[in-house]
Length: 354
Image (cartoon, one colour):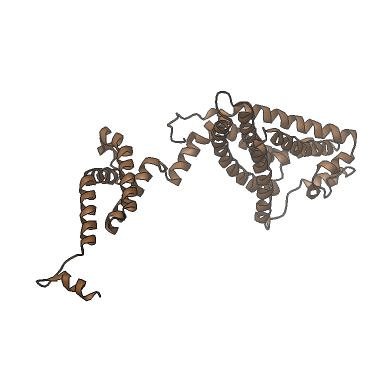
């Protein structure tokens, strides 16, 4: 059955294409010739951009880039629909992918983003949520006072507030010597790296939860801050009863000025999302949540960095340095550095963080 067809292809020792293949080839050639000018122009622009020669790309070409990309994407859709030749499809797919990256893709690599983040993006995002920071700080102070007053009224509240891992000798009725021993340094740094990892995991859980609960109009985030600081208030009451307030604050300040600051930022970021959803203004709730969520996420990236620093401080300097002045010096220095970076360091905005 196929012999006559095959024999008809052979004329004068040459192989001729069947009519349907020849027609498809003509359609593909015509399709490519009609649009190839735009494809070549797009490819030329992309080559110059990819080589880092953006200055050599004219304003006219930059303005034409989105249009040329859409034209190539439309050509690709037509080529797929009409089943044009494989080489044309492969060429268009590669071209459209490269063009998409330049039109819609990220403008920065990881290291460039991190550089812009640390060089002002993070601190700028924190200053933009200043009102939420003030509210969160007020609630943390209130939580500390509430914890103190509850335990001062009834010692049983201490066991309800303070986690069991803190109840070694640090319980109501402990002697001054026992409490002072709990603040003492450790001999050597063995095993402290594992301790640092445990502390980071615990503190990160609190911070992430404070941020994640912000979607419920920020109320759960504030409640978590109050509860977390009530623990601190209860322990302050315990140590102050034995005239060890300064010793306890010095012991806590080594890592606490970083750790508590990080938890404050996480709670404020969560509250920022909740407050934006509750009072979206002229925006829709989804738009308000999206905008505040991006800003909050930027703050949370920095919170993770702070918690890593806090875990290292808590596991090593706090456990190995015992002098009252030395501990206050470390904690105070860290607090001054964070405050200076967040509120005094104000590089000009370049728009790269967006």
